[in-house]
Structures are given as C-alpha cells and as structure tokens.
Image (cartoon, rainbow, N blue to C red; front, side, top):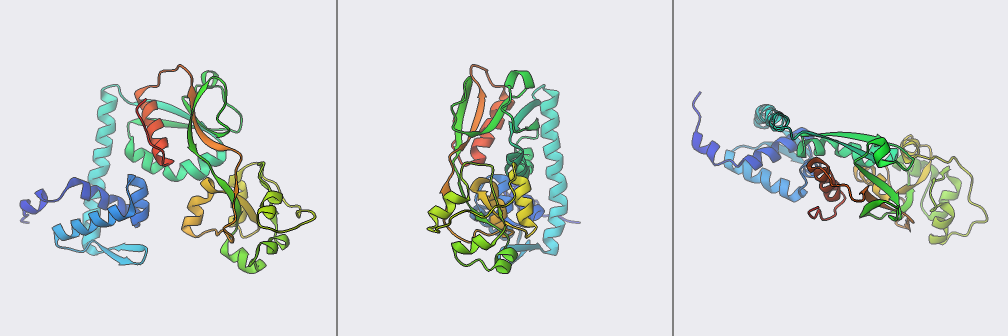
Length: 304
C-alpha cells in the first residue's frame, strides 16, 4: 500500500492527540475536560485535522458525535499509539527513578463526585505518578497517616498547615426531571410537598426557604445524610430533593441527570482548600499533583 509521507508530515501530533481523546469520549466537551482545553479548541483542531487529511472523521449531531468509517480506522491506530507513548513516558521515568507515590486525602463525597470523574485526565497528564487517595471524614494527621496533600472543606485556618484557596460554593435544591414533574414543582413553595433530604451542613432548608421568600412555620422533616454521595444517589433514584453543593453536583447538572428547579442559591459557610504541612518541602511529584488540582479547580498554578 502506498503512502503519501508529505500528508503525514503536515499533520501536527497535537491534532492527533485531540482526535484520540474526542474519539475515545465521543464528546468534544469531555475531550476538552480531559485535555485541559476549551471545547471550541477541540472543535477547531478537529476541523483542521479533517481538512489536512481530506476526510470526515466525525458525524456531528448536535452535542453528540459519531465516528465515520475513516474515523474508526484512524482511532484504532491512534489509540494504540498513544497508549504505547503514555506507557513509554511512565516507564522511562521509572527507569530514571522519577516515578513517585503521592497520597491525597479528602472527604469521601469529594473523592466520589469531584475527583473520580477526573482520574482519567490526571492519569493522562501524569502517568508517572502513583496517586493514592485516602477518603476520610476525620481531620487527618499528615505525618502519622503518611498524607502528602489534602483537599479540605472549611474556613482555611487549620494550625500547622499551608492552605491554598480552591473554590467557594453555593447550595440549591436539585432533583431529577422526572421527580420534578411527578411532584409538580413550579414555584419554591411546591417543595413543601416533596421529600426533602436534609444536608449535614450549616446551610439547611430553613435558610433556603427564607432566601426564596417562602414563609414556613416548620420545614418538613426528612432523611439526613452525612455524605453527599449517598444523598445524591437517593436523588438520582427519583426519590427526593436535596440541597446540592455546587461543586459536587456540577457534573450531574451538566449531564442533565438532575436539574435545579430554581436559580435561588444560598452561599455556603465553608470553602475548599488545598492543604499541606508547613515547612515540608514537596517532592516534584507532590508539586505536580498540587498544580494539577489548582488548574482543575480553575485556579492559577504558580510555582512552589
């Protein structure tokens, strides 16, 4: 089979990398998240790659994309090539003694709802780092428990640590579209006839009803969960309405699996912080994890 090497030399490797991510996720948005770029940048890269190749790689149908036959052929080869390259990068760093273990502590809900959907993106960015996640509700002891970094939820004034601000958040009611239709949620007072899951935070339903201008003698009782993951699972089961934290419900809202019937929000008392021990010189791997977390939260990642 003949091959035009001039075409190959005109194709940027970055374009192939973006194509491999888009084809693997079948979504320009999810590919953008994985690569840390914008959705429009992915779209531009794919248009340029198709123009250079002279073939269509995707069939676009609104937000959904499907590989063409040419796209399937290229993805088969590209996926294997980039898998080999990622493994090669990891292997060469191991051979040079640069592969490292980093232990990261956080709340179980943050691990399940914020970190877990981003683990693939982290692995792609840092194949040389062996990330260990310690999910716990107690305030960990860095030295005693072998923790390198922690994502904490609070006011940021813990003794003996350096805390970098990651994000503030708000709380607002969330439920599935099916539950909203079944209960007939059209105005804030309609929530009084719904099953309300009570959060394990200072911002409760009483504060939200005040913000919404709904006068209630007593907020209806309901189940209380100490973990947002369990509460969100109950919501996804079309069983209740929950006061969802904006950082932890963002992905489910974006995917349309849950909805926020009203735009009324209550600011949370606590924020997310990236924490490390004072005076401890971070390893290269630890600092790489730190910078990745800052970028994932949309914060600038300055030098150590």
